[in-house]
Length: 205
Image (cartoon, helix red, strand yellow):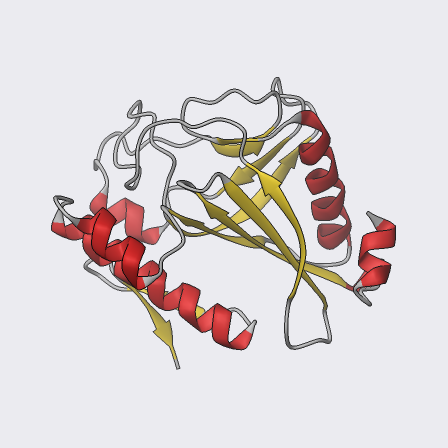
């Protein structure tokens, strides 16, 4: 990956990362920048190689759903039974309010071996590349790596089509995710996200 970073003008020991995952499109985007830069650049696209559950957030242990929301990667596991894995901090503050209060579930990872019951699986080659990037970023001082998991690319057309028949809480979550998506698309910088007492998220000024 060193050549790709160099091509984008990113220095390995100044690397910062941001990830986006789109469930419907099976798409995983890696954004990167130097720590001193303001804007992220698109570094690489990967394919999420297997699906679990349906569109909509995770709300209970065992529902096989992939979470949707604003998260971060906080732990790397080199000894995973799924080759390598990156831990996603589900449940986040919103999930703790809106999900099952006794059994919200957990242990959500991005991992290899292309198998899943609620995680984001990759082929082994891509997870190796992601693991190396995350290791470099964390070694350079990035304590957690933000990741936003979307049900789909949240444009107006997709939101209108997919929201039909969904619970109100899901529709509101998708609207909040769209706000975060639009902010990043416009600025190529990460919005500061605040979680409210009702489980909604919003961009702080």
